[in-house]
Image (cartoon, rainbow, N blue to C red; front, side):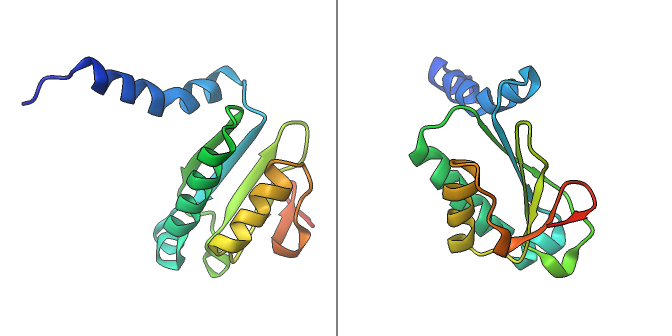
Amino acid sequence: MAKLRIEDLKKIKESMAGTVNLRAGDQRVKITVHMGTCGIAAGARKIMNALLQKLEKSGASDIILTSSGCAGLCNHEPMITVEVRESAPVKYVKLDPEKTEKIFDEHIMKGNPVSEYALSMGSETTY
């Protein structure tokens, strides 16, 4: 088994920074990519990659990107849920990388939900 080097530990620390922020409650936005089997089959990995690239380019440190299993709406995959502090969560459906980038720019960065891609706002309310 290979020994861990200081550089390896630094990489692990950097990759876990978002998780620590999530526990501490310091994030402004939480993005959940629904990556159950149905989501992955529908293209959720492309959505995750698009978000990772946008997040990296933005330099924002107050955004948490995470994944979950199936949300139970398989026919609407790929899906993300965006939770902005002090706002109702918005569930976006039938996404592709271009739609996801627009959601990132408008909702996540500017606070303006993109209703044309939204299924619902809040727990059970139709958007």
